[in-house]
Image (tube, rainbow, N blue to C red; front, side, top):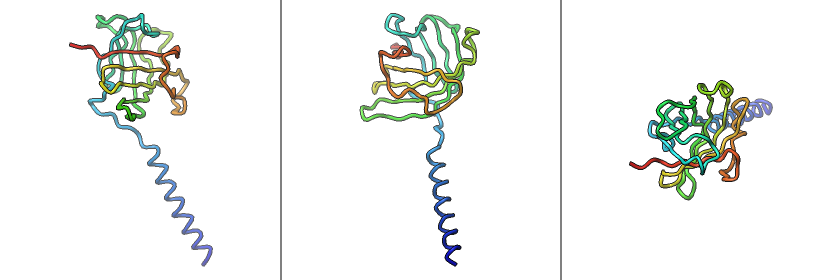
Length: 158
């Protein structure tokens, strides 16, 4: 009898752990109106990245060399892995990117990107890490303007 009680008790504990593990691994489901989506622009002189315009949309992104360009320099897929808001009202994203078009030497590159969008929604800063395969433990952990991959973009005003 004592053995059965232990087995039943252990089964309940195991079931609870499996359930909690499932909650921890919940996937973020992007909405159609994510703060990240839309066009962002910058001046090359204040950006370590060479493009002046980037457009994010559900499932992907496009980079443009110049603000007025309509043909992208490169583009790719994007998955929002995580989103949260900090105590200052800034919105943060962890996104996984894969370059699918553009310079042949960059096709297939995979990047994990940390984005910070200001409370006003008008400034986007980010840093990135080149990865071999998606690994949520490899996302950058902070936005550092001294980082070689640091980027700052602004929402264009009409």
